[in-house]
Amino acid sequence: AGAAEGGENAEESVESWKSEISPSLSAVQSSIPSTVRLVAVSKTKPAEALLAAYEAGQSYFGENYVQELCEKSQHPLLRNLDDLHYHFIGRLQSNKASVLVKTVRQLECVETVETIKLASKLNRAVSEAITEGKRDSVLKIMIQVNSSGEPQKGGV
Image 1: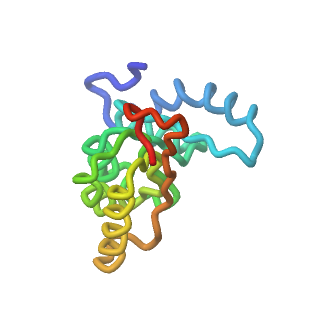
Image 2: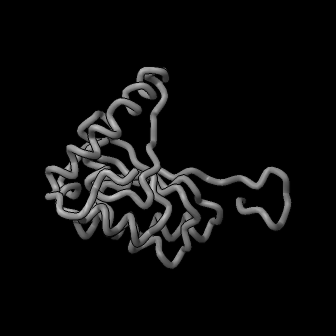
């Protein structure tokens, strides 16, 4: 996708992305049951593309890089959309848990919690963020389970 080309203003860029995204998004959304939540992976896509998808009805986005998610969540086009939700879908280093939780107000879920240490750091960061007024809700997490017991694989 290369809808956002140099020289376009943000509004033109969003409209360009919307014309590219909307037909595919509508087709996917109409083919899944309403009980299924579609999390669109938005890594490497610009804020204009996320806004276009959001305006087309997509409100859940997955990111796997902490820095990129922090930057997108603070972007003027996205930061005030209260019904926009982010899922962190990549391997999260425990030393980045606090920054992620405290920076990304719309972070709803971390899908890749593979250690008790990470779960504890996320819990602490959420408590601090709520106390500091940077979050108003708890954070959902998904525990990764190493069901095979193979040491080279992540999970508890």
